Structures are given as C-alpha cells and as structure tokens.
Image 1: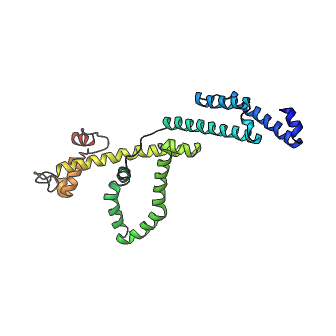
Image 2 (image 1 turned 90 degrees about the vertical axis):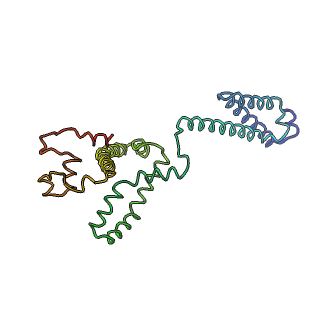
Length: 258
C-alpha cells in the first residue's frame, strides 16, 4: 500500500494516511487498556478486526478517527448512565403519592394552635383589623419567601435539617442542630397543651360542665376568683401550694399526654 501511495499520491496525501494510521493506533491502545462490559468489548473487538482487515480503509481514510471517537463517546455515555442508575438506587427515598397528600402534610405542619388560638388574640390586642395591614405586608415580603425556600430546599435535597444544611455548606451544620433543639423544646410544651385540650374535650361531653359553677361546698378560692380559674388550677393542673412541694401524680393528664 505504501508503494501505491508513493506512485499515485502527493506528499499531502501520504501525510494524511500516516496521521490517520497513528490516530488509529492510539485509539486502539485506549480501547484495549480500558475495562468494559462484554457487549462493549465485542463491539470494540469487531472494530479492531475491521481496522486490521483494512475494510475501513476502503472509504475515506480521514473518517477513521471520527469512528473511533464515536465508539468512545457511546461507551462513555453507557458507563455514565450505568453509574447514575447505581447512584440513584443507593440514594432513592420515598416520595409523596400525589400533590394532595403533600399539600395536606404541609398544611398540617404549618397550621397549629398558634393559628387558631394565638393569632386572633394577638390581632385583637394589637389593633384588631389595623394589625392585619402590617401583617400582610410582612407576610408577602418575608413569610412566604422563607416558607417557600424551606420547602424547595427540602424537596431538592431530601434530607433532614442537619443533612440539608451540611449539603448547603459544612460550616452551616450548626443551624441544622439548632433546628433539632428548637423542635425538641417546642415538643415539650406543645404536647402538653394538646393533652390539656384532650382533657377538656372529654369533660365537655358531660351534661353539666365541671367548670360552669363552683363545687359544693363552695371553696373560698372559687368565690375569690371564678369557677373556670378554680377548675383550671385545682382540678386540671392540681397544683401544689408551693414549688418545694411536688404534689401527687395527675393521672388524667398523664393519660391525656400519652
């Protein structure tokens, strides 16, 4: 073949053939030194056989590097897809079944006693309807963006408070730990308030409410205060006379707390 080239081709054609052959050798060395699946090895073996038999040289010699590059690109894509599938299986977590389930979960976490109990009281205490004007302004400027940011971070990272902040930056992991402590302290008093609510809910099914009137005989404390205050301190909480006295165990509140 070299003799034919010297007779029928100019110097530039000889340079093209030699450079193409050298590129083919480099591509072949790259193919043989990599580890791949049996399907990829069979594809590359057939490619090498075709190169050795000279069948690819029947066409344009300049197309040899492009075919080798195409084979390499295909194998790289297959390897990348396989790696992504393995990583996806290892990091797969449960997700919401539908949007309604997610929406109800968000509402359940966002709406609590503070919205039903505390907010109307604070609105009335701080000006009534006029209080809603600065409240709506701050809700649009700060409340909704921060709430949406929290949901977006949770949906994107799919981790807890500590893991999410560590993913954002390792230096911000303390914020996640602080969030866990805040949740712990909130649960201490929030669950107790729910226990009180359950206790009053059960007693409200009586024909005569126990906090509607003072018990008979009427205690002096009930006359000095009111039936509701007396029932709250002496029946619901069953408080002792001082901090030094622990008092007895309030079984009804304990059951309500469970």
